[in-house]
Image 1 (spheres, rainbow, N blue to C red):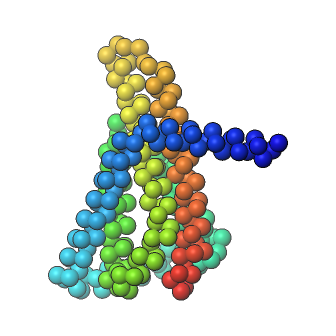
Image 2: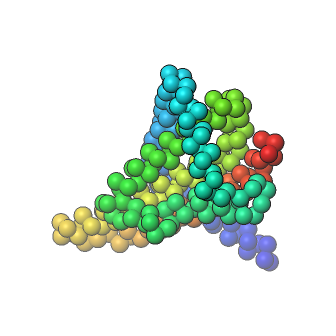
Image 3: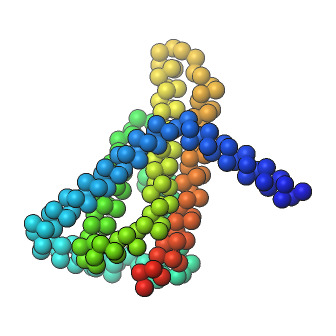
Length: 220
């Protein structure tokens, strides 16, 4: 009886998620395209700059090494590293310093800069890892957890965009004196929550892979 209820629950959750993705596919596709364009462009520019000025590569690595002295990253294969990665990713837009991204109108500008920053950082890290350790290293080091982590970031961005579309639409209806469409508003809030929860679940799995599987593949 319990297993039947769980099956029905998972089936309903799956159908709800699929319909949410279908309603917001344009937002997700646009976010995905922007994310990968930024990431690929940053990879290309990093390789170009380092090939023209090799000393920058050494300088960047020395800076990264010095930063590690002040940032205590837990060792691989530990629960501490798992929570460090998971909380760092999930808390990207869920901590007091970055909650402004949820503020209607103002948050759209912050979100754009965050999209540029995240895509750029991933591209730069991948390019530097490839230059330093060979092309095989970033593929093995980023692909296993990146398959889930990048979609998690995209769903997180899509969740915030959906929130802005919903709230700004309601505000505009109020401003021009029209009645707020409560059905669309509630659906928008519901989609925001679903996309946010989906991103958290993917971050949980990606953090596990990055903690226990990626270090093994890299021989750490």
